[in-house]
Image (cartoon, protein in one colour):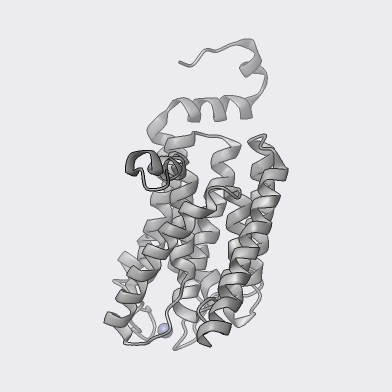
Length: 279
Ligand SMILES: [Zn+2]
């Protein structure tokens, strides 16, 4: 319901935001477009962060013929479709991965805005989604989680605590417990099996997860992450036949599941009532 109260008439910006918030599909369309642009930015991050290249200073180039990309090559989704997935100069095939990242990010933006509306909460969550998608792409390709992404997610996590009026102590304890679990798992595996099962990037990311979830949901989180990790390792063996597989994507997806469905960790804690195992 849009009411033209005198308050809104005095501020054009407020009227625009208010109209957008009231016209659902326009807002979702806008979220999709902005999401696709951020998807394009993720591709840039995924290429430059692991190589320690500056993120914004230079123009993107074709990796084969080095022709700088022009603005019409940079329109998310549409550029890929127009050029039929090829560089316009040297016809290098561009991986459909880029298109997929843009589409996935657009879908995440739409779902988050649909769920949380035009709010600061949605704003922080879409930025977290950008970091997590970049983390998944980079870890799959380079087996690392860049520190800059971790720092961004820590800043967003603290901001989320303030916006949602969370008791920040609970989440700082969560972060420390996450870090401790990470260190125990890493050095436990190294000591017991002489195996580098959990990289330092994963350990630091467990700190981030604890900061976002708090300590108690970390138990069901680890359970879900473990299951997803097994699925990833099986997929990895099927695809590349390598023993080493990235664990970051499983951690990231488990974190999203626990964050968006807080009832799930609660159900996990109540599971003993149904099963009667722990009585
Ligand atoms: Zn080219």
